[in-house]
Image 1: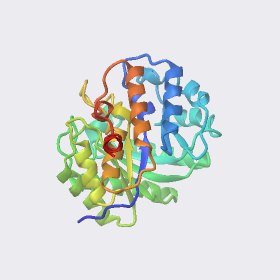
Image 2: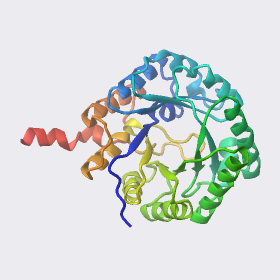
Image 3: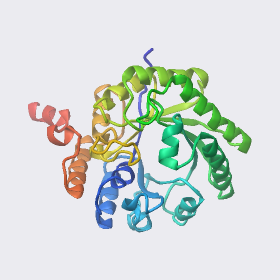
Image 4: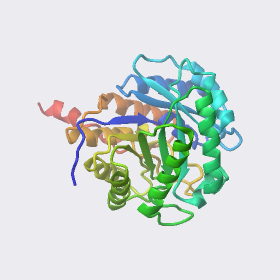
Amino acid sequence: MSDLPSHVDIHEEGPREGFQIEPGPIPTADKIALVEALAATGLRHIQVCSFVNTRLVPGWADAEAVAGGFTPRQGVHYTALWFNESGLKRALAFADRLTLTGSISLAASDAFSRKNLNRGQAENLEAMRQQTAAHLAAGLPVTRLGVMAAFGCNYQGDISPAQVVQAVADGLAVAAEAGVGITDISLADTMGWATPIRIERGVGAVRERWPGMRIGLHLHDTRGLAVANAHAGLRLGVTKFDSTVGGLGGCPFAGQKGAAGNIATEELALLCEEMGIETGIDLDALIEVGRMAERIVGHPLPSELLRAGSLDAFRRQAA
């Protein structure tokens, strides 16, 4: 089944996801400079930091300084990540600068839930009930449900579409108890187990069960299949993707040191544009920001476009 969208929303997570895993420390000024450079490329959604335990994720000890330090650009939504009420309170201090929304976050793998959040599935469901209540009490909408390790897990092995469907059903039950309506479901390939056929089966199972939901993908390029997986998602009508400039990042709790990070934003944008799918991104400008990110972290990033450049650059030369 092919159901190509006319446009996609790309949510840039390079600053948040990238700087959480770099050995660093990365200067706060460099983090802010990257956020501002990304906003100038046409990206409309940028996740700028994590309000998380700084002992576990020392790369975000300066979350407040970054959240308060960049100059917002009109029309760009700046977001942040948190996992508990303490993180929520920290994020709320920047409600005038950040677009704050609540979400329900689960894992299709109990083993990964314990590794990432230090709680099993049943404990995490209760935590999500409490977190949803906290979001609503703070006046934040809760419209998104995320499922981590949706295509496989380094600690538990293969994850079936049925397990993903069950995780989504559990999350929707939490939402229903709280009286909130979920409109978006995000499936995350947290440890790079996805292949195009796994994407087809997983996304297909969720879409078949909940045809009215918008489905997004959070893809990692651990085994070099992120672009192929994005293509499979596009053919199924997926219209929202998370990505990171240059391929920054990766999950610090995935148990695979040195693996490639998320799908590179510029490679995803190239794929979309060559398929006639609008992104609103200036690809050549974004490639330059990717090279900037490479200079900031001080080592090569996995994106091939940082070395090859865009096709349009060569089209202009040939014209």
